[in-house]
Length: 441
Image 1 (cartoon, rainbow, N blue to C red):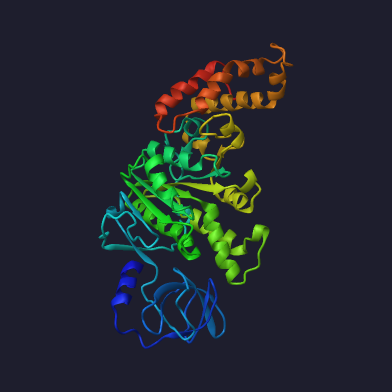
Image 2 (cartoon, helix red, strand yellow):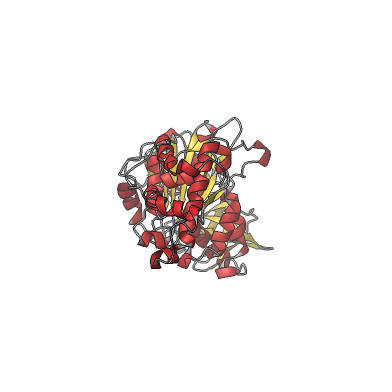
């Protein structure tokens, strides 16, 4: 039974189990209860004495004779002495083909006004990551339709990639380009902790209103921390359902930072010690529990995941950015300087990398990409000399070649957000860097 059905049943149920606990203390974010012996992670039902206020919560801390609950909703309306019941159903959500084309919340309640979802299959929100020896080798390219990524940062089916950027640099636009350009048969998008107005904007502007083969899971900034936290896990569970059917799934999440902030609120409320930037240790533990669920599984399909990370003040040493890079199989860094120059998507290829690129592309493609990177790096290193006219042509053969190819490289890195460039067309364009790409220069 899903949490939605459980909640509906509670609202219409006149009698409840005679075994219950009692609320002894309430704060803005947690509820203290005595009289029951639950386990960490148990789902509980909070019922006010008049029966008018009902809410779901999760057991997040246990002490000798009491335990603490983080509510999925808000604590307003509850009092000390109200009852708490343990649910035996756990955190189960409906999954299935009926989710395609829909916008739902973390409990898979419809948010798009298109009617109820009917599914006979249920899956747990919390699952262990793929076992290491059951993972398939990443040996096929995953096309996203963005020239810079496909050509210079090629992704593979089952890869986990981070998109790192400051605010307003173009993460949502790039996400829309990846969703539209990808040939994946199923696409799952998790919008976690973002502003409410950004949800319809993302659907209409970035996706063109087309949700074909797409599921969007939404937990906005006004939702409780627990909703924002488990919204990400719920979206991953939906992606895993389609992966288990043998599908190659595209998973996008915006953003890991908001997800981490939700856990920070929960952890600090429970008394965890703050570390760098106030993040408690549980945040760093939680990130791999989510990210490692993506990947390629032998005998089944794959989940190719893109996680956006909001880098405050463009500081790549931010603890969430640093931890994410250590878990992911590649990182795409968006540059505010390139955005200011009008280059979109503003991907800084010198600071970006794909750890599986060499395993999924041809040797010719590899040489083109290496040559492109080298020439682009030479331009960046000698930018000041070129601007003041201090460089004399002929002093450096490679730099001369870089100057000659500069316009081509800038054009290659630019792309209209509405365009999706096929992989073969991208290779043909990248070959223009080829005259001196005969070796691994």
